[in-house]
Image (spheres, rainbow, N blue to C red):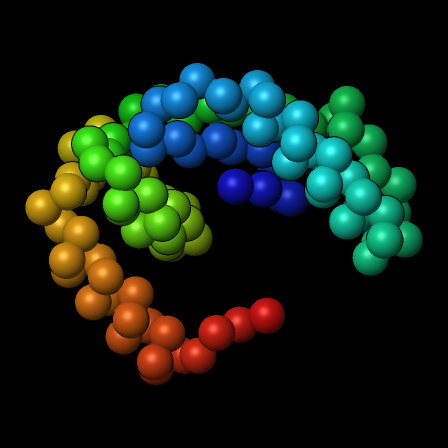
Amino acid sequence: MIDNVNKEFRFYDSKLTAKGKEYHKRIALWYEQYHELYSNEVFDIKKWTYTDIKKIPKQKNDTDCGIYVCMYADFEAGGIPIDEHTFDESHMKHFRFKITCDLLRRGVLY
């Protein structure tokens, strides 16, 4: 997640692949380029922090990562705290249905 207000990159890894630092660098580079292209402000990466969010629901299969990402974003956007017990794989069918309904109701935003 990119938090512009708090100048923070938050990394949610549902599989605990331990590649957070590698992804932080890639995301920061992409965001710096994006920011310079679409903003008149100078982007100072030194003012930003990186956080690996560890206490989150973990997936145990290789098929639900997209659903986990969408739900992390949904909870984050709604200001709902997440911990390792917030949801699990038993909720994925419901979340797929919820995401489908959200997309049909609101459409895809670009």
